[in-house]
Image (cartoon, rainbow, N blue to C red):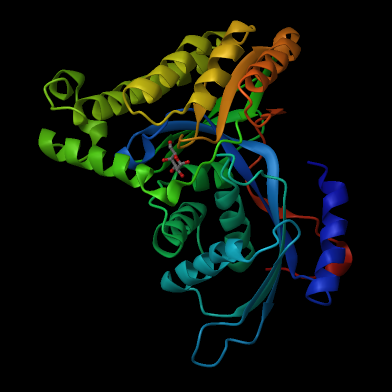
Length: 377
Ligand code: GLA
């Protein structure tokens, strides 16, 4: 949002905090997943968009490699007060080194307008902007996505899949990204929002992927695949899944039916029938709520109220357990949806949700180059 204002402000912040000029500035967006939830780590399909909110990383490599110890890394954030976020750039630096990038120190100043904790992948945006700044030319983007995922899995300790990083690196304005998580093949699917608004409802309900429930779901999927004798739930069929014991049966049923819904959604979008996505979004939410059991009251209320007030469809987006819901809303009904959800939260004495529109935006890139910089990497 408003990069023209944010880039010079970031340059000033860099001069103040780190001194001098960055080598360059890299932008990487957060994501909203349209459909295909908890399918990425099952070798399945997902259909996210990159959103028009980004982490900006101003990076300057330094010669200081810290002798035999870890490279000297200095990080500042324009938003965060404590240092907890720094585990991400440190993790990225270590994962890049594991992948063969020669160690170097660096100075980093980050400015992000992706809300943190809202389930919009602020962490993937941060990882990808930093990874591009440190190693843009060393690795192709599939490798960079895998390196950032490794940073998150091994160094941050969240056992997430690869959807968020791929969406941040490969998003395209006006398109959804159909991603096959088995071979990382991507296809851009037109997602014209003519007359429609894609609303994000940040429930403000707490959401932490590291807290164990996400990993527990992931293990259930692996156990189900093992019980079925398939490599991943991607390869399972519904009839066999129905024979499993609970809770594996419902967990696996979600994954198998959700992958089918992603295919249907992509077909509808290819056919220019975006308005017909509604029932698929609703079915995805019901499956996440009842079979995969990752929804919470705040998400269910956001989804139900959106529909009642005129949304074509709505669902939780991201890992669940809080975070955000999305609603596909005819422009004329946006005010009504906003009011209905806000009122429902007020009645329950819940923290007010943050409700805003997003658009499918471009994936990560270098931004704000000034001719006089004369730096090329
Ligand atoms: C989180 C993870 C993703 C994915 C989603 C659920 O956002 O980071 O890899 O598993 O949950 O679809």
